[in-house]
Image (cartoon, rainbow, N blue to C red):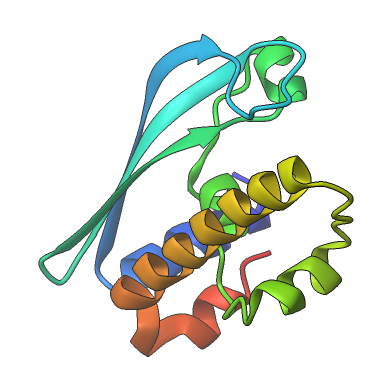
Length: 134
């Protein structure tokens, strides 16, 4: 086990959280995916709260048949407040040239905001420690 996985496991243990990662299917995950990737169901439980979501693994991991671990998941979840839509566009470098671009970026923005809210609900009291996993 490498130091990053150990850090993630230690974090989950220290805050009495459990994570399960189960294979769902291999398919296109993002709207602009050119090839399929492994998709997993992830469940995080802590203090009577549960957050369930799907995780689209990297194409590299899919090709090499590597399964994600708790570090991979915790490193990817949104751990910081997203701010306004304009902040989001600036921070992540999106360019909006059409109504279609606007709708696509707005959909991503809303999903990231929801993820942050759910992660913060479960880990708000230990968010500083979670932020160390990147």
